[in-house]
Image (cartoon, rainbow, N blue to C red; front, side, top):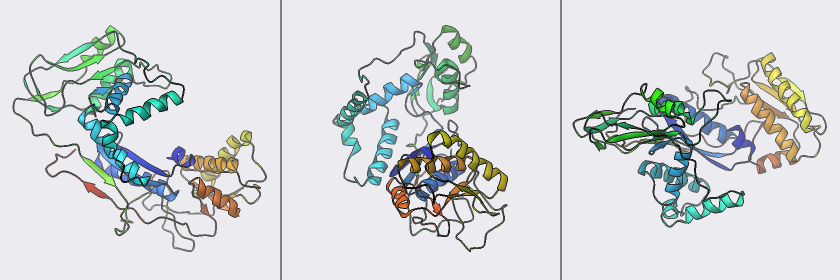
Length: 392
């Protein structure tokens, strides 16, 4: 979020995954994360929407770097797995709506090839070759169905671990990633399969990787009876001005207006997003032009002041920074980013009106000392779930 806000993004659509294969395993945790990120974007003047999408079952038919790129290109060409197409269109429609292009039809762009044409131009404009071949693995191991029936369960976490152990991911940052490694799926939950038919061919980069890993992997679950399948679940967080948010639960970054009673520090709070200032904040004076070499030192000072005071905020006196420019914007965005990482934020003192205007122009919004924060209407949540869908 910090990077998107710092680049001056005007609108943002977030895909927050929930389920066994996601960082957030429960809908409650995913909803809280989505609310926090939507609140962060809105607080900084970015029109933000989050879709909560199911990741209990793998999305699409591949897991792996080159395999997923190939599948994405298939979608751009008007094909691809139905669930990937559905999610792609849902995200595209939200983005087009946020940009004010409500009449644009992303489904038509996929069908008539114009989406593919734009993608090819984007790659060429950056010096790439859209026709470059993707890497392929020299080895393959096929997992066959243990019995005939209907596939009832295919766990996204298991598939992710399988792809990782085959070389598609890393356990440490210095570990190599094999672009060609991964897993392809021949069946998804609800599909009828026959004993001995392929379910999941893996593409390891060496023969031993396949033999070692697949002994540990749990096979897909089958049932002799047909299973009812439901369309993918999707929840959406949208603006709902007439719906008052529940202030008893954390809904993002909330600040106390000047002069208002402040609750104790034990009140509900999101990690990294303090609700209140318990003590008088420290002041960091930013005199004169700041060089790029001084940025790390100033960022360290912000973090140190937050840790020393426990106030949750550092006041940055910007009155002496001189004429505003993109260098000043970059400085403040970086200080805010480091403050957020340390669990706090920065507040501006004596900003030049021209600096205010420039920050608004690039889509950044900072709290100013002595002035109540200007915020957009509160966000509510709307859920769109097909009736009869199974619980995650």
